[in-house]
Image (cartoon, rainbow, N blue to C red; front, side):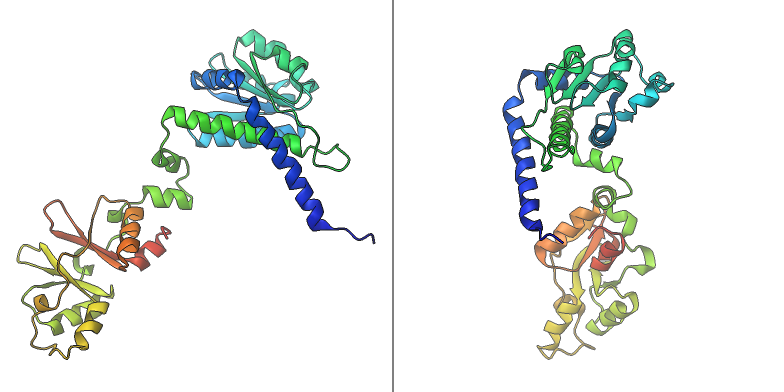
Length: 323
């Protein structure tokens, strides 16, 4: 077998594709702005079409648009000629991908797109092609060469097209004022959705599961409560259940070092006052940030009147998939 320097070949591919994407920067001018305006004004959906490798890229672009606040879907141009043109309405915008700008299946349905009077945006590698000339606006994604040694396999061209699609999607995201919470609503099943949508009240311990002792109880009683509730801490409250402090496993180790009598010492004498607390409406991700910032493993949860309503620790966040 011929010896190959796979690492150098891989680096050469990445360099070629990186250069192709970098070259796009100078081409982002008025046509790109116009394309964004058309897509932003769209009252229907952005319909992405493309054949072959451009079709695969088109599917990804449509998915990125949809998940960042610009409703979109992919239509196979071959299927469009056999009924799927019915998926395109007069309120839509069509985004057509073709490196050559001469893809037969796309050119076949151009008259139908024109008949619907919907805006047509082309993304092509040939600004003089029929698709480019037929489009209301064309985005030039031409490349100097493919990364393939034969200059045949779609590599640099598909990467450039994908990058242009990302540029459109993110420009629209910013224009729409799309937020992280909006993004999470499109991804409720993923880790991001859990981090951005889950609230403390959904994972905190409540009722009898919350470790809690009165301020005049002894340290010994507090230790029994910590053991029973297994959260590594207990809240210290007044008669109204208002939080006045916390006592944790760490506090216990520091207290034992001082030789304190656990049967006689009031818990209020050794508790940590002014402890960090969470609210039930706080995002679980915010609670995690609070723990990280102050190097703590548990939080008490209070309501608007500082009354104890719950508790959670790092294990609860782990189980919920927030960490």
